[in-house]
Image (cartoon, rainbow, N blue to C red):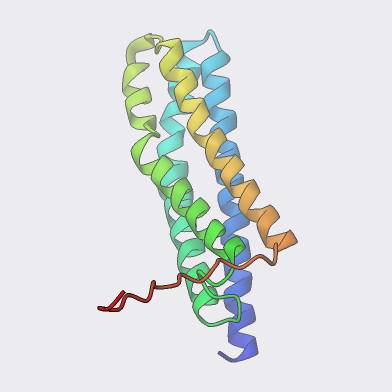
Length: 165
């Protein structure tokens, strides 16, 4: 890949990754505020705002970060699974996406707080934990990008099996 194209993809990757971390942080703050407030109207409004953040920010940014990361891995000396830190970043980003898809439920929280009802504490704090865990995964991926541990995965050696042995 030409250097200019590679650098452009790298810039897009960095921007999407940093923006995704900001979006996840915003979700963590909104969830924490909704869990701590006694004002059920404020909690309902916070939960109502979260799907817009997820669909306008989280989903597109995570997919752009994933796609550009794979392209960079496939077209550079780092590879996708050649170095453990690159493979770890890939797994961490997939983990962020899976947490968001399977455990984060702002629509359910909006429904739970409709009409001035209070959502259960355990459910509210569970919703705080999901984006907080995503933030930890994204910070870890960022640290791996900066420090780039040079360890490589061990090659898998096929056992030589012969008929006489």
